[in-house]
Image 1 (cartoon, rainbow, N blue to C red):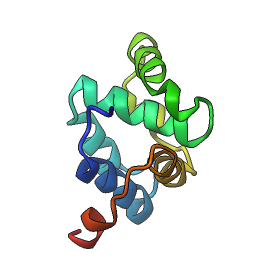
Image 2 (image 1 turned 90 degrees about the vertical axis):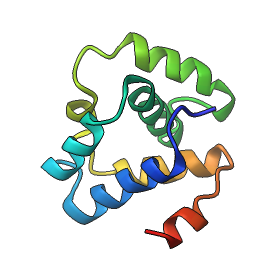
Image 3 (image 1 turned 30 degrees about the vertical axis):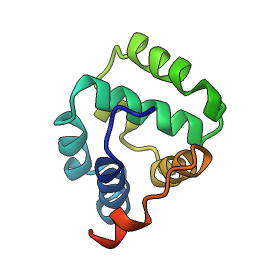
Image 4 (image 1 turned 30 degrees about the horizontal axis):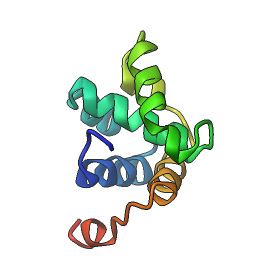
Length: 104
């Protein structure tokens, strides 16, 4: 289970698409997330880029927490495929965000 709302993940995807993954808008938003939300976001991205299988989400979150030596916004900043990785992660976890996207 992710410790970040679907709406926040969708917001990250939208910001990365609208302003680019290295934008200050995205970095500011990610830096405003709490530690659990940031760890979940990194884990979701890892599942999306297939570094972890969906059933290993808890392991990915634990590793994201253990390896959080740099600010998360800096780690994720500049990843050109960040929105795709997050969307793929949601899909691989079976999380439908269509309704959330419709409200944004």
